[in-house]
Image (tube, helix red, strand yellow):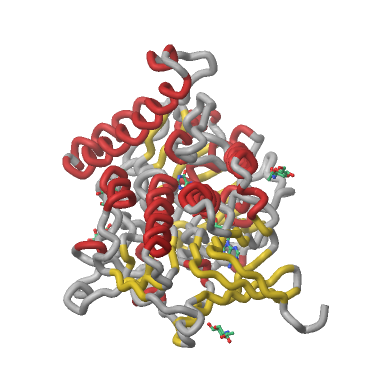
Length: 490
Ligand SMILES: Cc1cc2nc3c(=O)[nH]c(=O)nc-3n(C[C@H](O)[C@H](O)[C@H](O)COP(=O)(O)OP(=O)(O)OC[C@H]3O[C@@H](n4cnc5c(N)ncnc54)[C@H](O)[C@@H]3O)c2cc1C
Ligand SMILES: *[C@@H]1O[C@H](CO)[C@@H](O)[C@H](O)[C@H]1NC(C)=O
Ligand SMILES: *[C@@H]1O[C@H](CO)[C@@H](O)[C@H](O)[C@H]1NC(C)=O
Ligand SMILES: *[C@@H]1O[C@H](CO)[C@@H](O)[C@H](O)[C@H]1NC(C)=O
Ligand SMILES: *[C@@H]1O[C@H](CO)[C@@H](O)[C@H](O)[C@H]1NC(C)=O
């Protein structure tokens, strides 16, 4: 082809083929059967997060009964699943509903421009070195919430002097050989807690989890194969519904309990941890967080695998700060020294909304962090653009699905009324005193405060609440509240 860019037209373009993109695909084809859509995905595979992260032991820390799709329930007995089995499940779901035929892999959206004249989005797309143009009436960003290329860089003094190997979990080298080696994992979040037992099981010489501040870690029992609950004697589809509702309710009640009775909750979690730890690992200071449960995400481990790893004698936990990294280890503020062949920097994600894609509205660049989220799904002042942000204090998918249901209902409403645009509009009054849209106070969320859009304090600008209210809103909330509709014939 010459320099003529190929042009493609769809009613709806979804960006991203992770959990959110596939879920959106399903909601589009069921709610809007006459609309055309495609999913543009930069990678070679579906799965997003679960296709990118390949560190040892990678698994969900949500249960798959709610992290899985509502329309294709997770049927295996284990609530917590490996990264690989999650990719398989997402892939199988896409195939089962014909969503796979809508996906175009190795298609990276590099810019998105709204034209009020055309009442359309114009997306510039890169496909293996070729530029293409996609036009869409509506765009849904299923691009997740962090930067794929660049993780959160923690400032670690002296790290450049280290002669061993430094690894970030986001880019774990598949050929990394840690057998018999000394590994230090810097961090205390879900990733560190997953890697530690996995490398112990796979022959690491010695592994040290070095944390600046402790986290709450809770064991989740995995159902044994063959084990039966009372509902398993009911018809299969009813049983699956019951497990799902149970997994929506119990974590939510636990969350409410943690928020209402933080001292009791902290004691409860710490007591359970103490019971599972070998005697020589003291609970203080290592399992005594400075914050209340659910200020930051609770770390879950299946069947207490994290606690059990310490029985091997090859795992330890150190709560201290780094004075400096040396050529062959880490010097701590306490004066203690940790030898290391491999340093794993499990220091978190660099948050990012809309995949970092530059967006313009009639040639005006959209400054995402200064916008407000309408019902946690659309940006103020930006027409016909949905942004899927799931829950961070419950399974992501529950929030992603309420978002997709709301957006497809909005699109249907526009069709029914011949509207060609829907733009969230916030008043000055409502935009006072903004808040962070994610219900967490973690390092990575705080580091991203000025990268994320705002939530407001009232009406459709409130941050996500709980699944029950969001689900109700998705199906019934007034779509005109805070929204301006336009009808322009083109
Ligand atoms: C290690 C790890 C573990 C996690 N565990 C859990 C958990 O247990 N429970 C939970 O609820 N949440 C968890 N999360 C959060 C997790 O990211 C979400 O739950 C969920 O996987 C996000 O799905 P998504 O589809 O929204 O985004 P992603 O999975 O991030 O997928 C986004 C997709 O968009 C594509 N994309 C981005 N930009 C572009 C572009 N410009 N053009 C084309 N394609 C693009 C990406 O390639 C990717 O495939 C975890 C996150 C991480 C990093
Ligand atoms: C997904 O399924 C397709 C077949 O439908 C297969 O070719 C592909 O390799 C699978 N991808 C993954 C990551 O398993
Ligand atoms: C998540 O946080 C929000 C806001 O803090 C809260 O209202 C909600 O109940 C929480 N959801 C769950 C499932 O824990
Ligand atoms: C789209 O917007 C980008 C910036 O966000 C700009 O560089 C590009 O020229 C625009 N393209 C068109 C066709 O307007
Ligand atoms: C976040 O946590 C820090 C300490 O962990 C605390 O000082 C701060 O007040 C918290 N902020 C919010 C908004 O809860």
